Image (tube, rainbow, N blue to C red; front, side):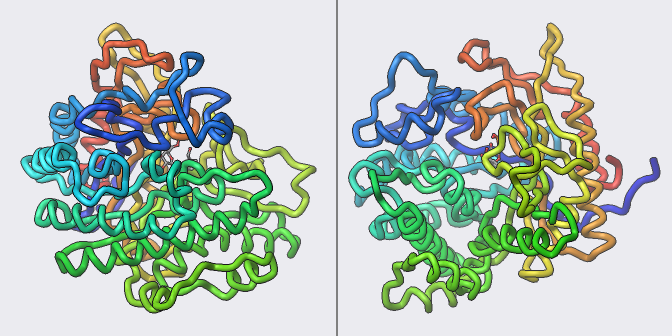
Length: 478
Ligand code: P53
């Protein structure tokens, strides 16, 4: 195939992970317990939590994959060396809040946690890899959940400000790119993961969710202010679980439903990027009797401290219709949607739509006119290694090739401004949705299974050399 045009000079190619899905070492280095530690693999992953929240204890009936994960807490130097070998320009990772503030409300940070990430960033620096740091990737200290009720409590905004002030101060000169909350819209779909939220019997869930949402949005704006104050070089982004909704058919009801569903996601970014709650959301909440817990000065803070760029994950497009009961829904995805009959799907039922990636990028850029950063994309699949740990993952290469080519079109044909691209789970890690190891995204295979067996040995898959070539040709040769 003829080469495509190259990506812009300085395009940030790389890969992405999240602390709780790769680090393990959940009780080392003074680390406290977080919501992400207590969710087991399997059918009880999310429901079990509701009743146990107040006095959580690990039990013997369940396997908790985040406790050990892929042990990257101990292997990061070797793993980052492999990323460097692929030519990564950036590495997206997240900070575990509980390594820095084990309970969350302490006045002084835990030096061991700070030193850990400092060495990690210096390792990146050694290879010329720019870290892209997610401040919270679904994690919230359990203590803040038990004592304060998670993000529904305004005090979390202050604790978060304390956290980010420590991070921006300590890592000044080492980290320039920051994301405040991973997939901030996840809170509507998985509130425990998104905001450490659980609900009391009879509680108005929607009100609790919007309390938490407003507090996260305030925390995000305050973090943006502090980041810019401490170092004007800092660039702060929001992060959306993206994927445009299509109308199932062209009847106006379906088109309107798609617009409504898209707005459910855009509502968050409208606040973070434009600096105010959009009218459609204000009207909706008014109708539903939900009150946004504004304090004096909040509106000004939101208006003044908007994000520098828009980051997002993209795995699939979605479909909207008013005839839901008539249609199949997609399986295994927190964002369950109506099945699109024109698309193939992954082994986990996630539909595959590279053109939808280009459509999504165009919609985001049209709406916000700020640089985009694709911080997650990839295929979760079952890999079968040979005796040397080598995996011929042509299916993954094919998925990524189609998506990178679609991004190339968005940039070079449509003029969308994109800063970089990090594939999800560049090294195999624990799945957020299911807790499985079997659902792999990496260029690097990790010998560990769903039950926690395996040597943890790393080996390169076929896609490792393929991605290396993509980066070396700046996206022209996929
Ligand atoms: P897993 C659902 C839908 C879209 C994005 O997901 C999602 C999820 C959560 O399952 O989350 C992001 O591991 C998230 C990552 C996660 C990745 O997608 O379920 O930011 O933490 O691992 C892939 O296959």
